Amino acid sequence: KDVVTLEEVEKSKDMVFLYVRSRTTSDENPLSKNSEKIVNIPLEELQGNLEKLEKNITYVPYCGGEYKSSLTTSWLTAHGLSSKKMYT
View 1: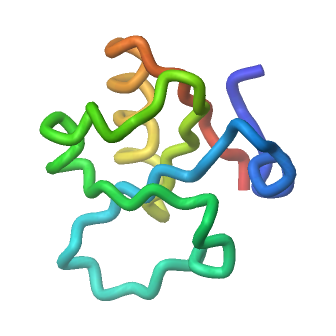
View 2 (view 1 turned 90 degrees about the horizontal axis):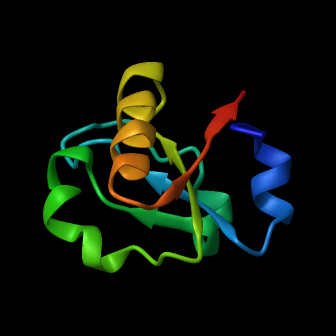
């Protein structure tokens, strides 16, 4: 299954959100209530931070929009990492 729900990520022990919004985005992180389930790496910094991502974790990119999330999912998969899209 390539698409998961917020509830599935929250309940899973091997899935975390990958928050890819840029640091200049003024919006508050809507996922902050689940802070232990969030890795915060802006998309523009992702390539230089791949070593921070664990191979045994499935990452669910989040940015508040479809474009960066889809791009991140494809990019992670191409680099051998597990990634799923979130259905909101």
